[in-house]
Image (cartoon, rainbow, N blue to C red):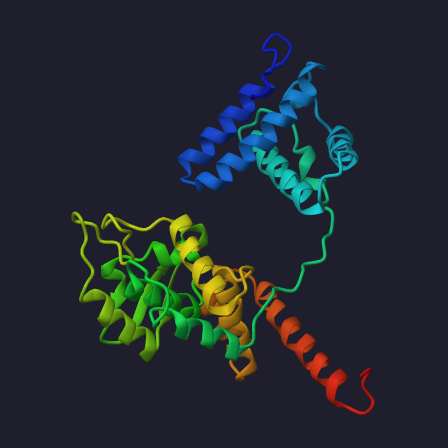
Length: 306
């Protein structure tokens, strides 16, 4: 049940929140972002509604008090970081609209979190998994589609949303390029290899859209497969083929990047292929490779820990 705000004591805070969320919709932000920011900011407004604080009354001290309250509830640092991002966007909007004299959230600091190293299976494990897809095994309704999905996820390093968002006219079969639409509506070209090309030809021979759908990957009704549907496909084969239900679509993306790096690919090139805005994000794969090297050293070198 959604908590409501006493409109008589709200002093315009809840309306300001709704105005900000409406501005995000006009900017065509993702529904996921709008939903999360909305939940964060409505909770924020409820917390302060009893005090009747207006948007212009907030200062850095009151905002820090809110974050301290979140910390006492045992929220994870990553969750609090998102709340900080929500507040920054909200007060930046109010400042830009000149509803407040200054932006008190600009000096808010997010709690630091240690980015965990992604779980990356070995190259041999990943290739063995992909090879099970569409091969002899459990009876699946669309094994050729499933094989192409895996070849695209692992062979091109796409996010699952990027893969299911591919359209037929995004594919250049002559030059073997995909036109990929990534986060923040950024677009990038991504090449695909001979195995993906072969899987594509086989799949297109049986692809049967139910209407004028331009989607590459179709569900059993002949319409674009959903993000959830594609995740379930990966989970099924990971459980059946690799015996590891923890493997998910992003695992294949991690494996793509790590295998390129281990084979000597330039980090900047990997950044472009993955569509990372910042090179620091791509640098995580360097840490994965170094940790792998340390395990080899510890196990094999006489001066190691083994």
